[in-house]
Image (cartoon, rainbow, N blue to C red):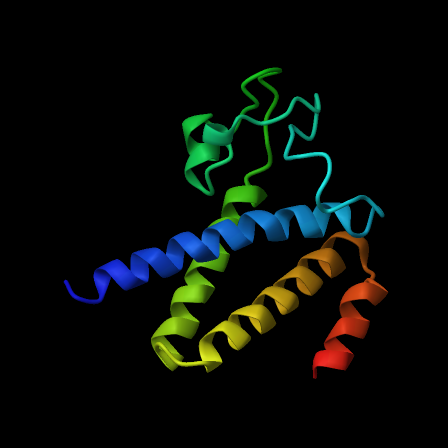
Length: 136
């Protein structure tokens, strides 16, 4: 029971970061701002309510459909959030509470964003590849 709470916290952090990775993967190749406008339905562009934007669970609560237009929202969104949460747990379990853990979280997120963008567009954005070269 002692390890459950830290793992839950790590998963919540990872899934929240995964939610932002969805934004990066969608907006960066399109040349859109990562900050503005706030999260919205990809179909009708209605701004999401904060309680609809809870990683993984928001999509489940809405049954995979926009609250406004009722059109389906891709299952990829919660899958990326869940996978990122799982990757954060894996890194945490391997490195524990050390200074290496946040660095590996960043690296895993960078690789995941690159992989998903490559899957979608068959390109790798210079902003991510160049930053990887500098950080590496």
